[in-house]
Image 1 (cartoon, rainbow, N blue to C red):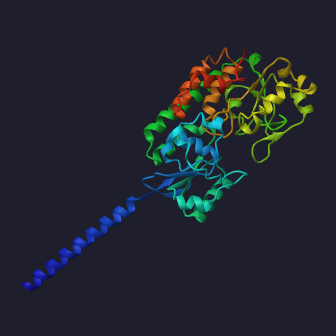
Image 2 (image 1 turned 30 degrees about the vertical axis):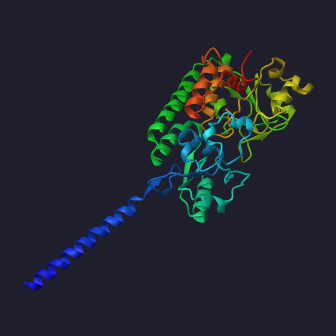
Image 3 (image 1 turned 90 degrees about the vertical axis):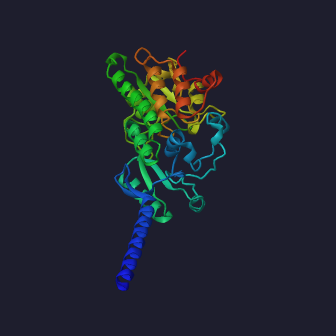
Length: 363
């Protein structure tokens, strides 16, 4: 009888230990889970994510609009003009540098010390970007999630990030806005009569002779709204192409969209200043002769392409209305106010809106 009691005690003790061990394993397992990112990579990530480092500007803009409290820091320092269009609560975030593109400036040791839960790489999905993500993950020991920055898939990117970051409600709200804007643009563009289609040149670089050709990630908005980009894709690695004045005169665009220098509203006005104080050769271009040269709104981010992220969504409404006001019947000032409130958590005064849209609207 004593033996039976002892054995019963041992069995009970082992059962309790086993249950405790299983419970411990379940708790441990629950701390992470596997997800498949938008590049098809299987990645173990924390169930609870509170801090995220983005390798580049596209991801910074996406995270700032979706879950700014989880943004570990900015990739680049904001100018005073840019900062004035950002919610003041987030201006004190540290500058952590870029780990993506041609100008890598990130200090990996500092980022690791700040201990982000995951790293976001928002980019073009390719073998090259997958390899880069795998390398960062291996060398830093932090899960890297790859997400798609193409304009057509921006809605899916919001939904994907909303799911893994436990921000589904906010993600759905932003995704729906993007989806409605993109689908509306597709529908409107399909109704533009052939005789109404305008030839467009996107002037970039210090001389205005660098451009984003048709098919580039930097010209998706032009293509979407029904503009005829006069330069075809034959670009270098960053999606831009250099041309000469002879080529531009041959293209003879109806409209020139001019980017400010480096995509920012700098003191000298960048490319727009060059075009509006044009040399004799520029004066021969149809768009210049007809005063159809417009500046891209660029605060806090360029509305067409820099960076290629959600900042382009308001660019769809602006450029559509600029090129084809009879088709895209938007009140751009009201649309701007709504977009900045919803996406950037920033309420804009009329003065701010007028400054943002200076040289960007038809007279």
